[in-house]
Length: 118
Image (cartoon, rainbow, N blue to C red):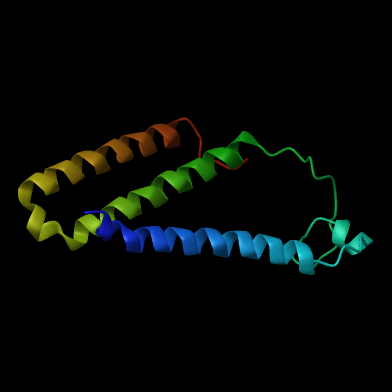
């Protein structure tokens, strides 16, 4: 029984040695010269402009959360669509309920003005 765990333990050991080795190599090989370019925040190669503590509207966060919710919907719909024939009517009804709950939430957000940019 314990012989079947040997490959898993070997993989675990190699993973730990690899992680520790990369951290040590990074620390040893890293040049430690501080420059103004290294201390600046990375902005896609551009000089940062403005205050980093700028405030965003709540509408921005509402749209961002909506995007995440509907992105997760796609994550659940794609595997369901692939296995739709195997799941049968029970799977269809379950996914219909799931989509209807999301549609109700979308309509609620739309009525509350969460998608309006002013």
